[in-house]
Image (cartoon, rainbow, N blue to C red):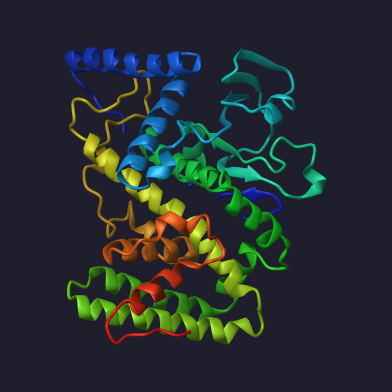
Length: 376
């Protein structure tokens, strides 16, 4: 991901005729409710977006209340074959659509807005060269259809798994709807001569850097699994000291490393955290007769993938594996889970204070303990 052009970056079953009839009725209700609220066409894409917005609302209620302030975060574009379906467009987007057909203020249909084969991102640019683009200083969600995503990520086989990826991106949109966060991204992070590509390059080219990252992640994972509070607290201190040694070692050659890493750890870690939390909503839908369903969707599999969510399972292990290209996702995700375990508040000011690294909340936690003070 780069700031100038930000890509935030992500089984058919058989049921009885009786269940089909019940699902048809319920899905029609769900999709019509969305259509009535926003004046959208009753289509497969609308039903899928309806499921995602339902998921967004539920995960906000259970996990991050401010994320539920809006029914949607703003413009989203759904790519399907030769078409782009534009949901909830703002004036910036509408004014720059070409050969489009308006259904309502909430939905436009247009020829594909670009030829890029794969989309799963929030797109925004602060570069004046992009001033004529609809995403110039204006975050826009872009999603390939479930069918198209599967061509590029074979493990994404269902509408439900696709929905968790979309919620991840919606949270990025939520981040950029925060005035303090977007200002920091544009005026501070966006002008540095170092970005997420440099983080990836360090991991790929310097095996010691990647090894140190993985050691830090292992400490976080060990702390998450530790039941003894005193041992857990000592592991938090060990993580902070180990992280500090890495930053001290590499900051000499890369003086912007810590600032940029802190930013992306928050940005991607929090979105992955929301993605993970949304999976438990889908878990609650499994075998639940009142769960939302989607009719005429061959990619909808009644939440069977989420019957059990186990981070040791291959289907979910990517969330906690510190890979060379996405370690900042994992470190952020595990740090937030650890802060939850420690019952230490961090969500309230996280986006309002984007310059403050997630590890600083762990430092504050350590400093609340008797006879314990952490100084970097």
